[in-house]
Length: 257
Image 1 (cartoon, rainbow, N blue to C red):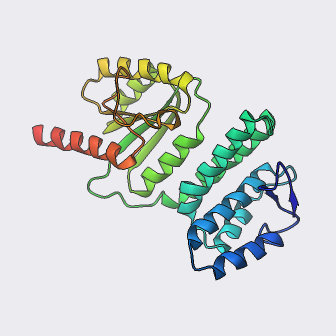
Image 2: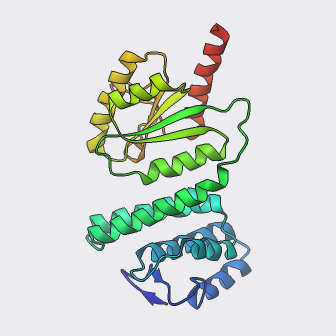
Image 3: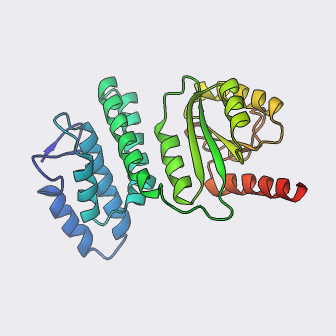
């Protein structure tokens, strides 16, 4: 295996990613009684980082198999490895150690991997309190990996989720008229898209005042529950708080009926 973009990065040689250095790392992790799971996830994230940046090939199924050998679950890949690698790609772009093309291709591979793993939850039987949710990103919001991870987490819990990228107030309103949704989740990844998302939310709430709208995303870290002038009913990156808000609203509607 070779190194690229610093010593933290591992690049695969031929065949399985779990070879050479990776095998020695696995051996060390498995013999250490302390924080084994976190170490496995850390090493798995490095292998994933190397895989999505590999210019020769990217074998999604082989990668999942390799990470499984390391006892990294599919949920760990989605919840921990993919977000960590996405953050490192973003930092590489900011630091000018990765080109736009490299970040674009790597992000697309992460998105495809997330979607592939998400198929595992397609046949989960909805529970009695399952919600039908619209997960949207504002028009010209290029960061779709975060919403894909969130959609996977929601579906894993038995909720129905429809992803709507490049949304406008009109397109969201159209979807709310055509289908029953228990709530709208608006995801923003950058400060530039926050203003657009806030305007969309305010316009949607004028047409559908009873729909619960939750605003979240990477750019809102540290602003939990302070919705200010965004128009949202709740601003949070806590998935349980978001679900509780929409479930409570759904219960109120059922009682009223």
